[in-house]
Length: 111
Image (cartoon, rainbow, N blue to C red):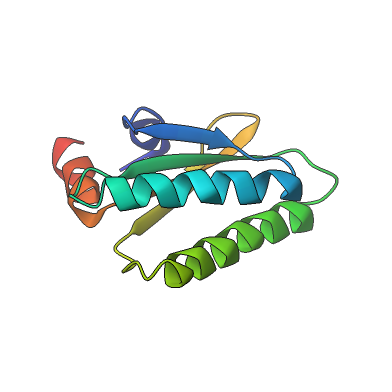
């Protein structure tokens, strides 16, 4: 599969994060939707900026999101049933798809 297939994959919600202060509200919303849609239809896209002061800042932002996400899932006693796909979304953003494995299978079959 190529980036254009990932860019065009339909998701329930897309969040654009460019600062650490935006992580907590996004995680809260993520947990709400994850609880609600564990039926196999869970799909989210997170967009991170490609052009920052340094690539290290973006990697740190992604690591912070991942850490907070795993911690919040554990705190809420939710089973982690996600597949993540990272890709270049466009000239300005990296993309990160978080999908239920059943949704990821649809991605592989349909594309």
